[in-house]
Length: 268
Image (cartoon, rainbow, N blue to C red; front, side):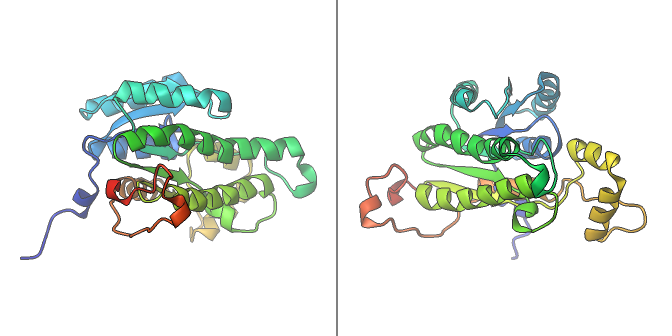
């Protein structure tokens, strides 16, 4: 008899504890709610406490625990404390979703400065790097875990006016690959690269630049009334990458066997 169970049952997160950055709005909020519906408890990180409190209440209404942790992920020195607060509130940590990211200013090469470029890397690369570095020991204490980085197709494309953002997202993609090699098999590291998603933040930018909105809508196959895709794609993808237990067999090199994530017998 064919298995008619919902495929989402293969990616349940019952008993898991997840930290999601940028969780007050947009993609981060959508991922957090999807995780809660799949059985996870959530630590929510963003700058605006009111947004976090609203999402936390939505999660609690689903019967899951939620901890709101107001913080700015560009405060790199404070990220260790953010992870400790999350693990303390949830009793541990299994999943990290590095969703927060962006850029303070877009423009062409000659409009940019080193400060703008370095801030883009701090937001999109350094913050995920540091959060992961502090989260991994908590994951290993529970047998393993998963890190999901929310990148962007912009990091794979060459478009005028997006230099700091595209370059930082490209670096995030490479960081994801390198971290996946180093932390396998006990901690899985993957990335999701959405196209344009009309979140509140992007909507304000496009409202001020209607030509950009129209161009992006055409790129996504929109009609005369420009409309960009919403959130549905990123949410199940994040859930699958956080919940799936892939069977890929990674044999550590001889000189890597003393590394904390290289014990195949403790694979999650």
